[in-house]
Length: 341
Image 1: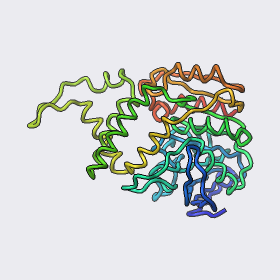
Image 2: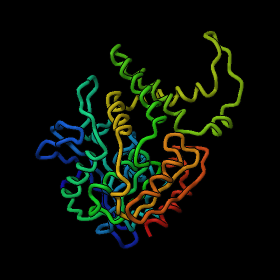
Image 3: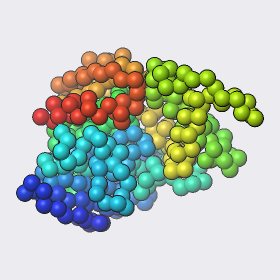
Image 4: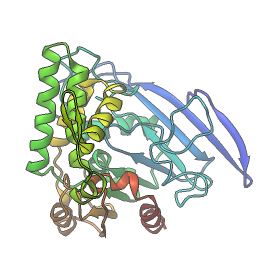
């Protein structure tokens, strides 16, 4: 196994290590929707107690291989640092946490370059294919669990259908067997914004607008009513609304850090998602949010009712809507502790 920046500590008489690398596949990857991708590079990171069970953790299209909190000042902050890590239910004293950058994304795995218009369509099943290669490379014969949230939940479900022998259990948060047409409607407009902006060499501005619109779908109307009820401010260019300032501030941050073409690729991958629940026989915990606008509660119920193996539906309420998987750390820690038991 090749390692980059390996970190060693002795904690509670168990060796805690961090290993990371970039795996290049020796041959082209045949894609689910046709065509091939070559070369294929997979950026990964593995952190935890030596010889402990491995848990693969997958997030939304903006998440990547940095999952847990890290002591490395040069490494990004883990995107799920409040849910898993040392001293938390998914404790790196007792588990190894494996993260990866999705292909098609803005990380170090293979994805479209700025200005590239011909990058192929990517399926959640293609992500499963590269996961399979990665596990073989790391000599991991079986995962203790796959935990996915949002797009990562879709990939976890695709893995449960196509490679059930790879994991002992699945946990899928805010990800159903298919996308809801209303969610596809919102994302289609976002992609159209970015594509239009790219034709005018304004990809960053298009991504800024798309992300601002996306933020309005990630959260609940009740949260916005509580946070942004103040009166608008008059400026030389007209009125500016508090919610408007928030949305475009989030859009600015996103556009500064992500590739517009990657956003198009993985946004489309979400809307192309479809698995057959009856073919998923791996024991599964599904987590549904009542206020989730993108993954309606009824879709999660339908998924649960049609699962081919043992499945448990855990429900929760959150002002944060779809973003509950990032914000409701206390609730998720309790759910994961029970599901991994």
